[in-house]
Image 1: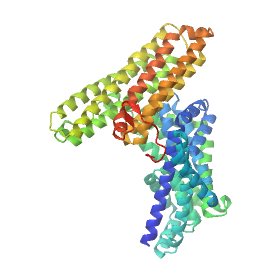
Image 2 (image 1 turned 135 degrees about the vertical axis):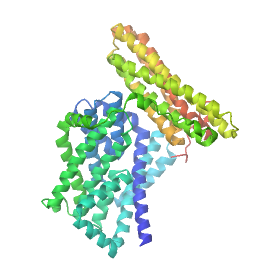
Image 3 (image 1 turned 45 degrees about the vertical axis):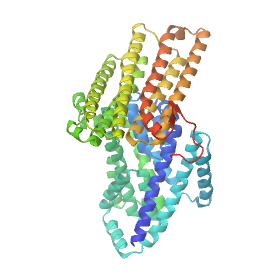
Image 4 (image 1 turned 180 degrees about the vertical axis):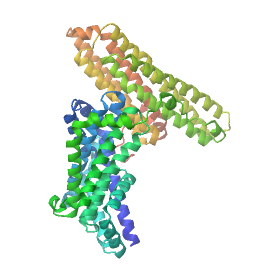
Length: 553
């Protein structure tokens, strides 16, 4: 029994890992295109929901789409109700993907795994390497589901397991709560639903229990982005709470229907597993149909229930603990956390600055300037903190780390200064002189800005995880952005040659904006340099040639 339980736990762990593998591959290969597509589809709630659904199917994660949508809401690119439409669509897309992943595809798995491994190890381009990662992840999802089926069949014959399953059949409320808790623990509603459906298919649990678990999984899935975004800015919290209110309410309604016995699960499929997946799809489709026309009201309700966090409170929480100075490893960790706060604040002013070029907003400009003052303060306090730490007898590695921290703090402060001083001044000049970029010029700058924002998020990931592959990607992005800026400058010059009036009037501002965005990207990318140097990926300030075999995944 212990061995079978271990096999089941290992199979579920593999399922979680494989879905994460797919998401990582998609993020590293297609994130800029995904974000651009989502933003372009968000003009109305219907297209936003469709875009969210497609993105969730590709990324194997509605939570990932929720986090992207939250970023759009924080930046002002999307109103919270439009971001909620994206999330509602993403949940349905994730549910549809669950149906795809229970298809019988055993015969093609060996070929898919072989193709994926060859692509991952032999690819000459980064994108093809990540496509290989995605194929491997998909194959492992199907393999893990097969392992779950094999492990649950003999477990289902155990008398204790049978008595537990019988108990839950008589107490669907407990099954509902258990489904929510397990989904929260797994941090993946897709993986949880697939696991519950597989349990039902093998007969370990009855169809009503599987249905209650799946309904609970939808509640647990809504808690995941709610918890992840609770410390974010108000628009993101509005989005997360609105999604939780809508989804939580509907799961209670579906649970009540299950308890009443007025629903015939046999209508949803031939097996208990198919019934669970179909119910999952039905719940999310119903939520989309009911909630999509009401997204503004849902956000208003969330706003009524949501407490406000004052700017003063958020700005006073320094990670620099003076009591830790006598313990260098702990003090270095404190300084690293303060750097992460700096990077998050830089990202918070980088994202909305593009809006000022479209429509000048004095209040938003003042907000950017206030946040830049916070970054200046964090920069100064970090340098003082590190200088006090260096008064202690440090190990050479610790001494090197202090220098890296100061260098990264300097770089982040430089990025903030270019955003709050240079870019804001350029946007103000356009407003004062009643100038506007040409449609082509604005599209170029907006797309370029999106790429810098994406790299800023990658920098946050590098600082949080220390992942060598992500660090290498960020350094490579610095070179790519430099080349991209040159191409955009050439496009602008061609428009000047064609005599475009708007391009001529805004030529200096256009070129300066591109140049400053490139410099901001370089400053933000610096956080990856210590890791890239340590792994040998950076030699003499240049990225070494990509490895053809192996390397970090």
